[in-house]
Length: 153
Ligand code: FES
Ligand code: FES
Image (cartoon, rainbow, N blue to C red):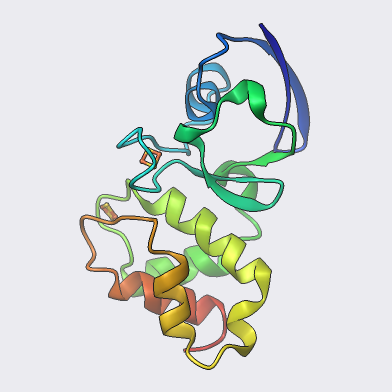
């Protein structure tokens, strides 16, 4: 079937199987390999992208069902510069496999503005990013990096 998607500001039409996931389309049909796929069942967050501005795990989304604009890590390079810098400064990644998803999820969190005013930003970050699993870092450096990018460290 032919699906029409808007990805990172561009309209694309692709001939895909009805049951193919968005993560597969992004990686295998569009070459957007910044979106990682690990568990393929919605548990790790590695495949997180923005759909209509909301952070979504793309391994659970059928490409044919997406109607809103998709934004991947590739299109967030400039906006996420403070996050990228903070991740680097805090050593918030080791293998890096989870990092794209972490940055995408954190971008959505920063955009929401909730970290500017909440009484306990660390607790909020831990709760909001709990769907993004990291096997390497123990999470503290990731939380510290997001706090820094939010101006709350
Ligand atoms: S690969 Fe999608 S949540 Fe793990
Ligand atoms: S840095 Fe390795 S899984 Fe997060």
